[in-house]
Image 1 (cartoon, helix red, strand yellow):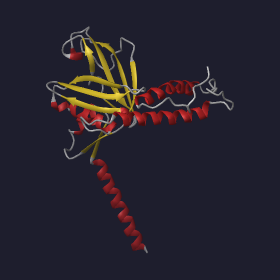
Image 2: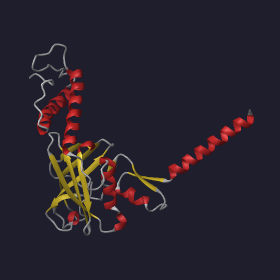
Image 3: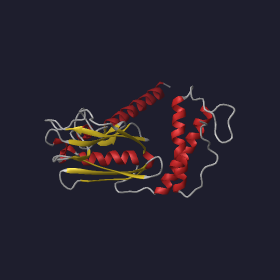
Image 4: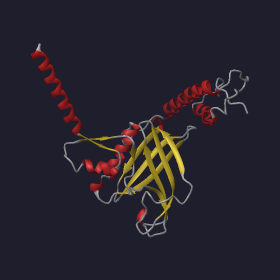
Length: 264
């Protein structure tokens, strides 16, 4: 009996020890700086992206869409650049912030304030159609294609410096896009299937929201919402409701007759 217990205990300890070793064989990263550090450790380590994922680290790794100076965000002080920041808090969402920043004597850092109104874009990872990267010389060129809420294809083109291959910024962007989208570099999703998937998600979400915010008695062509009790959910319903028929029209489907708008 004691021998059997000792044997089981021994096997348990060995299994735990092996598990710890396997965990130590993985180098996790969430930003370009951490990704670079993974190469400063054992070369045999497996590198794995970990959410939340961001495309910047500390104050650097600036990415820009356009600008009025040479040398990118390291241009002469006073140059203005349209900066883009990408943040994936989880595997389902990509949050993008776009806005203007002005260079100073140190160029542009992430902590530099925006000098224009910021544009915030939220993209479901399932709505990413394709992505690509290239580095002809010292700059990494990035392209992201996705569907907006109304089924229109949108392209985002931006770039960042990568003077030293040791920075591994091109590799990081490849890892970032692959992890989030589930697509390989240059791979494309079929646009009609993405639209259909998006439409079905919106309709399901609207049904759930309506069951929460509607009052018992409703009108024939619309329904009364508990707006004072659920103000944010009511506004979200109104916004999402406007996307269904445009998505359906992209698939040559007639307007949906089952979903109802909120009464004025």
